[in-house]
Length: 258
Length: 258
DNA sequence: AAGTGGTCTAGACCACTGA
DNA sequence: CAGTGGTCTAGACCACTTA
Image (cartoon, rainbow over all chains, first blue to last red; front, side):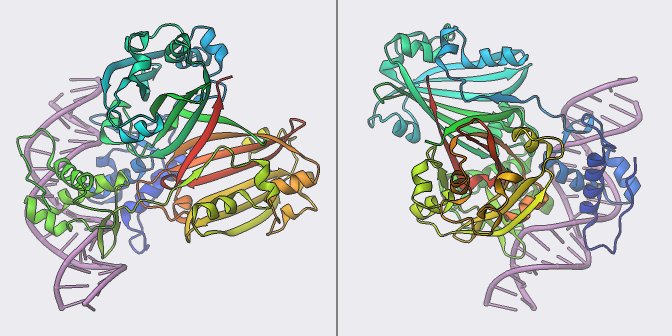
């Protein structure tokens, strides 16, 4: 692999130059996804720099999300994540009636092995933004369902649903297994026929806790999707707050020109 | 300001503990947006650590996008960006007929001063993904319009539109000023009545070039929205590739339950 | 000129991985 | 066990900002 040398006259600092060398090695294809980069020891020898300088170069690539460090093993060119494309009809009634929760139905179709874990069910006071979206009063309680989604054993999303407690209490929504069609099918069983959803999409860097639960490498942002479900009476019946590993998703939306 | 002390017995490394102290000072409101953090020198004295350890703590907050370092001045709590909420009816015909391009109409309503610069118009071969979305043949050419959007003089989005050359040639789409209602109004003038749009949303870290054009600090991701416009005949007439500073946006979509 | 962050050096010890 | 990355120390010089 060609790495070149540092030019001490060049205005750019050595760590930057080393990062540039490694970056272009990746772009050229000299280093393919999954390949190991030269170790810190090799870089310090090759460039005659201190170890911290080599580390800083690698840090630059890590924060760009191009490489992933694995303690004790080495630094590797990031593998492209298998992408989940969320189509705009993913909440169509036909899927609920087919008896499949949205996530499982889609994953099967895409040929990946889906799983759900870390299921937690609770009753509590809602966060302020959720209370507002559900149009609840000051001291109304909500049912809280949180869970983690995995595709081929890799965590890709954590989600938390909030429902007005009177709607959820006594239904399978409060059970670990919500039954065929999931939460939305149970709401419709109870007479809350769904009319439409509003999704609010943002992106940011993950918190330390999200990094852990989603097993995210450095330099990987998350997509945050907050979905509010409305029934045919125009009443909000659920808010679902999801945090997704950004590289694993393409969200697709259809917008009428009206 | 309360910063506490390092616990050397704690499993967590000192740099992490310092980062946690600073982070909770921000969360508590002890440090408000725009406030300066304690300098590296102050942190090394307070915690009795080496300077690199204090720097590492600050680096952690920078990569989370919570603070911004300014050379020679200090490290400051990130100012919240003014948020642009893109509603799902933003491409409604009524806005075009009112004679306003989507961006300008919305910005005015939100009370921010909008501007567009770096306008470039070109003819060229399309990138592969654009060619596919527009269903073009191997050597078809496209019209390319790129521009940068600013709100209150801060760049928030760069956008590039691609249109089949026969549709754009000879219209105001090839001019710097596309006229009232923008590109979409010109397409409808030419008989291509718009039916719907499909937006594909992803998030990632910016390239070096995007960091420069959007004046992004460390640890700030971008939202990438690729919008394809279809006319009433079902023919794709435009692909618009936008890269948005993530903290400046909330994208809102309405999804029918059908 | 003083204070700030940016970069670098040359060591050290530790935790994790894999042969 | 050797090799890898993770963290830390205690200095140094530099570039930028502000007064």
